Length: 388
Image 1: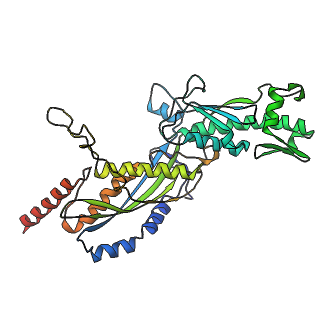
Image 2: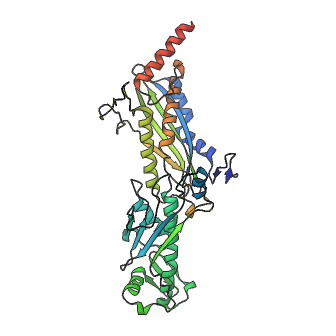
Image 3: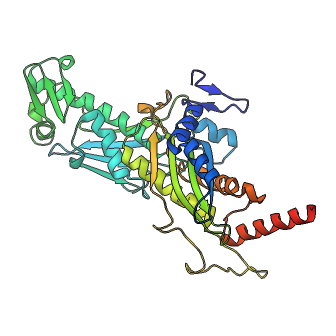
């Protein structure tokens, strides 16, 4: 970690983190010694125990310089956000990125809350509507919270300065003597709620200071990280599986995650996104496949043929968050993105091969279905007999 930020030979700048510590914590959470003892003792039902690890790092929130270096025709790399104080002291947030399950309605309100102190329940988040929001290239590449969250924070800071000036005037004190907390402008001798700022601006402008910023209680700001080479999130996952050598079936007994996405706006949202990704990764590892026949016709055209994990196939995930804020982004935020899905298939495969080690079998193709497991075991037995 003391080498961070670290630029490698490929000119990738890893902004912050402690990658070896993530592995150590995952090993402690999964309790390697206990798993190995259980593996050695054997299971009463004859199933084989396997332990697997998978680590990843992913560049997220790529900036303009990154896309330009790739030679893409359209070069994104920034975001804009608009914020407006409503007459009742609430806040309207307008962002061009689009939510498809990340909980943006919650998290962007929380970003604004850290700056303005307005209750998120009094906020409205308008997203993905090109008729109402500032220009945006959209939601992709694990960029939304870093880029649009940064723009939201910047816009709120501009708005905070304007409201502090109005509040100080109403409190008859210096602007330097006021603070914004809990949705109020607080001075040495009193406080003014945001609803009062809204009343004065919208209904009684004669009470405004003579030098008021006529940008008013609405601000649009852009955000582009500097440097803009993106952030690097990372995690280590570990899992214990039980494999039935007679049937080829696999059960995930335990699954732990140690992840670092920098400063977390909402830990519950982060955990949910990681758990959902890990569930998808288990599907990739064990179940999901789209085969075609020799004529190119799909053989898995319904969910009766296309297998997916359900509640009985998904374990109770355990997670630990390592928080090493990025020095290059607003609030130290990194992207969460595919942090759940990327390592899952690899570590499940590692765990299965660990369980199969005693049989001499090995599998390097997903999904690792019972048929493929049985075929690998049979091939290993045939090779052993041929060698004898």
